[in-house]
Amino acid sequence: MNPRNSLLVGLVTFLVLIGMLLYFEEFTPGGGTIPAIGGPFSLEASDGSTVTDATYRDKWQLIYFGYTLCPDACPTALNEIAGALEVLGPLAAKVQPIFITVDPQRDTAKVMGDYVKAFDPRIVGLTGTPDQIAAAAREFRVYYAKAPDKDAPDGYLMDHSSIIYVMRPGDGRFVATFTQETTSAQMAERLRKFIANS
Amino acid sequence: MTRMMMLTVAALAFIAPAVAQTATAPIAVSDAWARATPKGATTGAAYVTVSNHGAGADRLVGASTPVADKAQLHTMIDDNGVMKMRPVAGIELTPGAKVALKPGGYHVMLMGLKQPLAAGQSFPLTLTFEKAGTIETTVKIAKAGAMSGTDMGGMNMDMGKH
Image 1 (tube, one colour):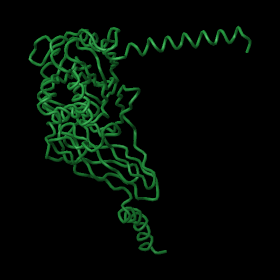
Image 2 (tube, helix red, strand yellow; image 1 turned 180 degrees about the horizontal axis):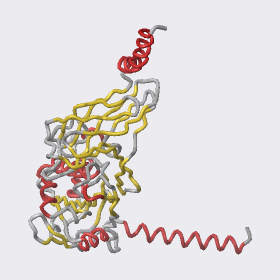
Image 3 (cartoon, chains in turn orange, brown; image 1 turned 180 degrees about the vertical axis):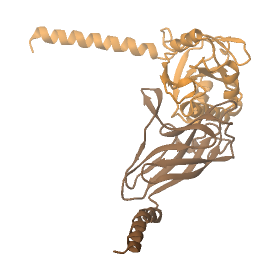
Image 4 (tube, chains in turn red, yellow; image 1 turned 135 degrees about the vertical axis):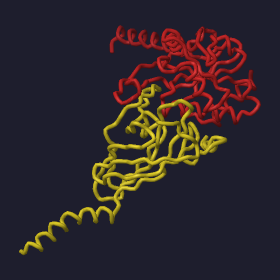
């Protein structure tokens, strides 16, 4: 390799490293940068009232996007969340789980309210207009799309990101994610630590 | 060959495979369970374990139940955190295979539930196999979001997993 080439390789490596640093900096919880996940939203609660990202700021928010016709992934995630609330006991009062639909066409406010109650009455179910849902999903980098299925009700199922976001109280900043593989006990343990250190 | 003998041979040829199949019971269905569904829900999922004790391969190709308009074999694909539920034409059962339909993988998707599935109750489910024909089983209903058929309520059963 001649000196000119090695200089070029060095420069490229340097730029890639800087890029990586900037990329990961964005995801560092509590870092000095603007939070990359989460942001303003305005949605409809099951009683028909309008709620925003500021409504639940006094608590640790667990935010999960899904839909009620989902027979597998969503019940798993909501069940783990409900289990975590049980494990937390009285500390659960500091946690607000929020289930946001990605299927506003079928999930009305009432459908959402009935659905979350089957898991735990402390979970809130939110819906909205297609635009409101799209805006909220964008803030959380949640992907969703209709998947045509001729046998499904109305001819479609939903593909969607299955991630539980943990947002801290006060500024509502993103601090961690759970997946549907995270058990109730693991969720409760991490939440307990977050609460203790806050 | 007399006419009588011919008839007997024909009859035996017809019956023999059926008898052989019953005797070896190549496909066994066990641990059938479903999650209770929330009020108003029209879809649900049933899970079952299927074992192939036979010498030949078979395939689970369909399901039906009186509690839903349709029962379809589905799989969940985890595409970088995006969950995609897709119908599958069949589930392969190689000789000796034991396939558990469970949350996060294969399930029998119940569409058009005639009434919500209530925890503690049960319902019949008929599975159709390419070679073994149909087998009926009883599905026990566990709580909403249960992770197994024995997860009947209260604290989550996965406490010891971490």
